[in-house]
Each structure stands twice: as structure tokens, then as C-alpha cells.
Length: 186
Length: 247
Image (cartoon, rainbow over all chains, first blue to last red; front, side):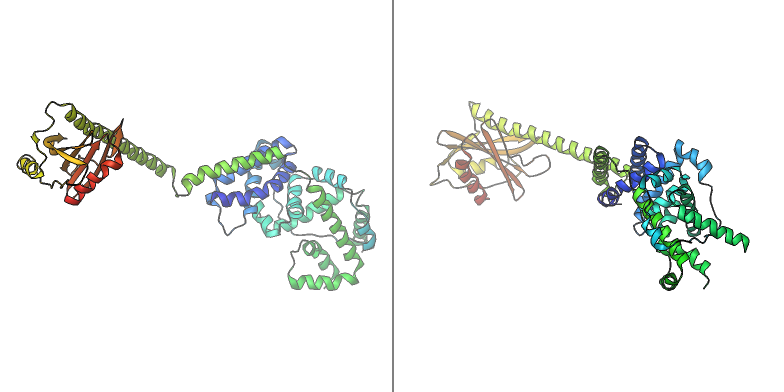
């Protein structure tokens, strides 16, 4: 790939990559090292990038693989990146009026704490979906997993996050409990 | 369609992963179903919360500058050779080729430098000699025949009437073991040497200058001419033109 084109594509992704790197590693210094290594690897392998494919997915994948092969990454890999092939199982939620649910704003600090607490594979897929606004296909490409797995992983990640945010999400939690109770009694 | 099916598709709907037809059906279902609408709102809140909280780390200016520098310098390095599509082996070959060309140029330049010195030495030694010419005559019809049989070529000596130049005479000289003709001219207080050799390998077109002595050169019909003098180049130039016109 032409070095100028590489710079044009890579530099705007510096902050998104850094943000994800910080979420993966947990601190500034490791995040900077991870981004730096990602850029170096991407530059080195730029000839292997196929122009018709997605550059963002490609470079995020390089960063993810770089992280997973690092010492910190190997530790989380043992516990968190076991694949989840089960189908999409969504539980019915509700029980409250949409107006009250919309009016209730989530405390950002609470979400941040919950995200940090979340299993790293769930955190990662939610950040790609919500922060990077990647479509499922691109997430699948980035994480090298099938589309079905992307769906189920996002679904489970949201559920896990809701549980961590249960005081904040008490409406939903109560609603879910009601639904579960109804299901069990019916 | 049952409500559970819509509920299962809510996240896909919010993530914009449903087909146009599926999304249309969802939008028809939602206004009449409070449960799905509430679940939709809750997931929307969650999405928004993650988006705001998740986008919280920004690289420092120093790190950004460092990365920009790293990328641009890598770009320059790779474009230097990458622009030519060269691999390291080819780059090595290029370096070797450059070395050969540069040493060739250096050799040529060193050789040219040596020849220039030799030409000027011929001129200066002629001036210093007690007998600077072997044939002394102002008459070109005397000087030209004298060279016959002494040099392996023939050339014309121009008519000088009405010019500031006068012919002193001539002699045979050698450059790179090749015989040539030297004509000595006078112009005011200056002496001008005209050297004529066969134009072949070994005799370069050494125009140049060493101290106050200037050498101009040209080639015509297989002969190489040198005009050497310490006089002003502009004043010497007409003699060169006369020689060119005569040959």
C-alpha cells in the first residue's frame, strides 16, 4: 500500500484505537505501547492489506491480536475469549412505560465502572458496536468470528452490563424478574 | 407474528441489522406493544450510556505527535524505495549500480582532470621553450603542408587577414601517445595554442580552466580541437570560429 494512503487511513483511527487499547489494557502506558505496536505491525504488513476490504476492521484486528499475544492478553484469553456459539436468546423485557424508561438517564460514571468490570470479550464487542458503531459484519471481521457469534455475544454483553448496572437499571431488572416469574408460573 | 419474535429482534433493530422489510414490520408492531417499546427504550439507554462512557480515553498530544512522526518517517523511508517498487535485494543492486556509476564518473572526472592539466602543460611548455615551434611561418600555406606525413590527418588553417590574430608556426605534439598538431598564434601580447587531434577514445572534450589558462574544445569531422590561452575568452572566441569555418 502507498505509504501516503496508509497515513491517510491510519491517522484518523489513532484516537479510536487508543480508546479501545486503553479499555483493553487498563492504563495509559500499556495503551500507548499497544497502539504503537499496532501501527508498526500494520505498516509492516500494509502490502497484505487488500484495498477492497475494510481498513478499520483490519487495523482493529491487528490491535486485538497484538493484545491477545501480549502477556496481559494471554491472561485474559484463558478466561474470557472462550467462544460462545449459542444462539441468540433474548428475554422479553418491559413492564414499565417507555416514557419513564427514556426519562431515566444512566449515570455515566456507573456505566464506566460497569464496563470496566465487564468480561473483556463483552466489553470489547460492546465498544466496537456502540463507540465505533461498527456493523455486525465488520465486528465479525475484526474479531474473526461468525456473524451469529457477534449477535449472541452482543446480546449477552448487554445482559451482563444490565446486571452490573442493576441499581441504575432497576426498572428493567424488575421487569425482567416479573417476566421470568410469569414464564415460570405459566 | 408473536411478540416474542419482535422482542428477540429489538437489539438487531436498534443496531440497524434488520432488513428493510423486517424493520418495517417492527415499526408497525411497536406502537401497539408497551412491553416491546419499553424494552426498546431500555436498550436505547444502554446503548447511549455505553457510547458516552466508552468513548472516554483520548491519546495525549505528545503521543499523537510521536505516532505522526513515526508514520511519516516510515512513509518517507518506504516511499524512497517503495515508489520504485523495490525490494531490499533490488535496493542493494541499485546501491551497487550507483556506486559503479559514481566511481565511473569519478574516474572519468579524474581522468578528464589529468587531461586538462596535460593540455595546459603542452601550451605552457611551448611558451617556455626556446624553440616553441618546429615550423615558423605566418603563412598558412607553408605551415599546413609541413604537417603532411607528420600527423595521421589533415586540417585547414584559416585565413587571418583583418583579424587580431597572427600565426607564429606549428609543431607536432602527443596526447595519449597520439600525434597531433599544435598551432601557435599571437594576439596582442597573448599566445594562443590550437591543438588538433583525431577524435577517438582517449581524447576527451576537456573544456575547463586552470589558474588563468582557459581551454575550449569542440569536435568536427572526426577531429578534436582545443584552443588554449590565458587571454580573455571573448577575445579568443573569434579564432575558434575561424577554425570552425575553415574545417
